[in-house]
Image (cartoon, rainbow, N blue to C red):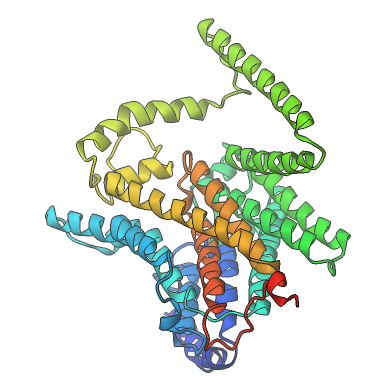
Length: 447
């Protein structure tokens, strides 16, 4: 009772400050979305605010503050190419599944809405951020705030692995979850950090690494040691997580950077290295096939969870998906002797069927294609944002084969905020009433 009174008093006392920010500094709300979800997204429901997650409360305040601010203009959304695709995503991923569930005779409860909450969250972020009027400084602040939030999260993960007792006590008090219990029981030796989920934590570090690397290369005012120090902390954070997905993604990004570096010196060396990698891969495949024929299992080559997961998909989940192919089984997953619904593809098929899966893939594919065009046209920080959206779209879709990253708190907000802000920046250059200076093409500014 006392805690409820305290939090109610804090909320009432914060109203004048929030109104001041709405009127004078509305961009603060957009900047605070990603850090709040990275740092508070893993907190338990009711840990600070009764019945609610602290991250959800902060997100709601930020969205309402932006909607009430003078920077938000509905007409700026106009007829953007992504409007219809985001509507498709919300309709196929939320409206149709909920209506179908109701037509089957079930009640639409809070748990049902929460099952499709990630799709609704994506739509609300787009609706709130895309019509905003953001300046170059606002964009730089937003990206740097997201980067520093991930640096702080990585520092917490590192301290957790080092056994720093205040950090462990904080996580045990407010950030409890299945992964933390696995760590405490000795079943796993990975950091859970402020996300409470090492898969989400690893992907957040990957996205921060991508943004930090680009900011370091583009901003000559930043010290090289300063940039490398930030990236080193994030890489150490990735080392504490050590998920297979994050390792493969980082290796893939490094391979792309290496390929682009070799392109400047000719393709011959790159082709030779590709041939060498192909030969090594063929040898590994032959070795695995030979080991399988002799009933020998290479744990270090392919993890046991991969075999188990594929088995569950084929023999446990596929019969359920087949019987509810088009519209899905429903928001509550079937009770089976397995838990391998962590694939985003399997999760969409179970909860919304082929309709939801196709709507999601079509929307993300369209975002990828549009952002590729923007990455060529944009300059400076806008180019960093556009390239980040391009790479993140590919990384998240490929990684979603194994994990449901489009439902993980922290990751889903990170991605859709970048997409929505890129839309807002693209619209600001064509809005005649925008006080923000338009983006000038150097070729147009030349006499």
